[in-house]
Length: 81
Image (cartoon, rainbow, N blue to C red; front, side, top):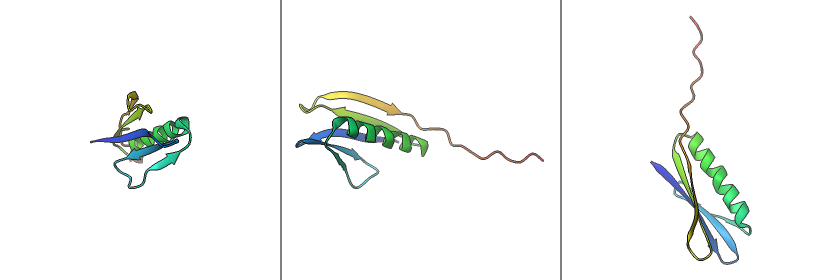
């Protein structure tokens, strides 16, 4: 399942929203909002789910789309017998 993360303009700032989280994050800077979205995408990918980040311009147009593929599960090495 792909987890969607969106960065959208709101008033004088920007919001970052994601399906797995109830609360949205607010930023005054679009760059900071994008950075937070990318960090969130990496965190979701490390947990084993794919994340898609969509960044929208003030006019509503899609500016960019990034995919953070799910990381393979990491398992501790078994001790040698």
